Image (cartoon, rainbow, N blue to C red; front, top):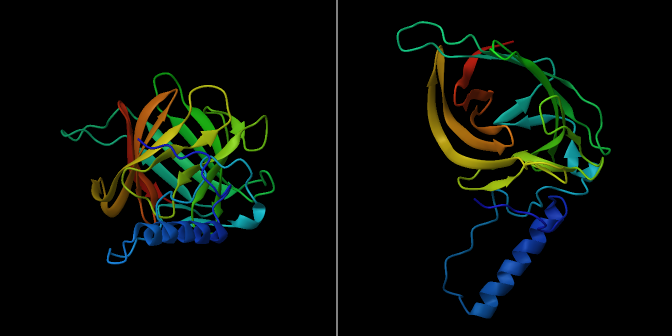
Length: 244
């Protein structure tokens, strides 16, 4: 698992990308590898400082339309426990995710994702997460309340962390939030280009993220154009059943 922290620039930008290319080119010249194959351009979480301590509002856009994590205000998605092999319903767990406009955080426009969970034996819960997308398509986790960790970027030392890269790459790992007390939230890309069958449909080009936090580990599957289509936290497994 790789954690990328403190890597310039402070926030992803085209200026940073250019600086990295110059550095790599200098290495090639000094090494005398003129006959080597051309270097691949940076991708994945290359060039990103994660978490980012000083998000620049000029680096962000109004909408979150990352293919694997689209957040269209007004959209509602329902995920429910899948049926058992015998056709009987599972434990009745249901998750409703609704999208709305969010407040600015550290001067950055955000989109709110409200997640309401019902059907657990121990009761449900309501979590509000705020996300923002930069000009390159990376989605950043700006704030959260109700689920832990509760934080807001720029308040009490909390820093915005990465949630979904513009170009997810197998093996990349990063901190989803920084500067807060307690166990860090670590996200790792554990699969890309996956096919996923689910009740009532199927998805391809699915990206699978493993999320490790103080509350345990879960595995989330994201399909392009749909967002979260499956979440598995052991006994708490849900799959996408409806959108509105």
